[in-house]
Amino acid sequence: MFDEFRKRREAAKAQHQAKVAVHDYPKRLAAWQAERDAEQALIDAATSPPAGNAEIVLHQGESCVGVLSDCGLVEERRGAGHYVGGSQGISVPIAKIGGRTVRYYVGAQRGHFDQGPMAQSVVATGTLYITNQRMLFTGPTQTRECAFAKVVAVNRDDQTGTLTVAVSNRQKPTVVTYGPSVAGWVGFAVDLALARWRGDDAQFIANLKSTLAAIDARKPQDPSAPPAAPSPSGGPAAPPATPPSA
Image 1 (cartoon, rainbow, N blue to C red):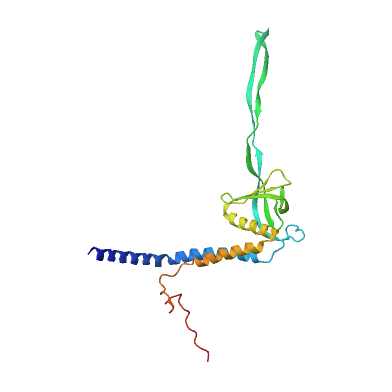
Image 2: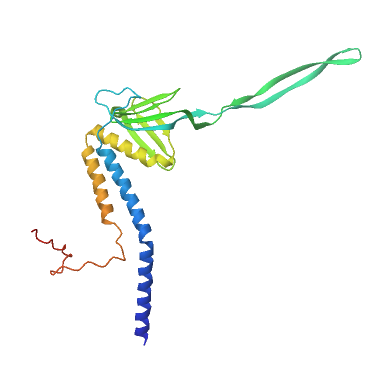
């Protein structure tokens, strides 16, 4: 009797799970399709022919990988300072004129000036150009160029949307902020640009295609579709026979 109850409970559980799977299938398929489309867009961008850009002067053999406007150039600046201290002294009566005492005051200033703290701040707004040879920030008042031949480190913070590039010919790194909403695109553009500069963009594209194949393998199956009939050998289902042509 207990075994019969357990079988009914397991059957009811399986039926409920099947209903949930059918109900959630469109949502899971849409999420998978969005992920696949995003990966395919990266492959299309990586395999598209390199383009020039009329807004900046390109070097020989240079091509533009990506352009992003409304970026901020960040530098460390000192904030406002303030004076700390006061004055002290003595007052000495020296005479009386018209019944009023005239006093002589002797004092001195004692104090010092405290400089403001150093803080990161946006000093210019402009456009970030990413090419196969360099990264270039241009704005109305500031310009920074980071040639890949002189780059020693590239760090990205996707949570804040910040790119930090250190080069050998500049003491301070170049910091550009653009916000987290486009951080993924900037990361892809920088990686593609560096791959093209090093000449290993073929491997870069192969890695993208490998990721796409893994996404295709995770495609959700329609739970309402009838299962495929097994092949006579017990292996995967054989494709339907094609009728001979007349």
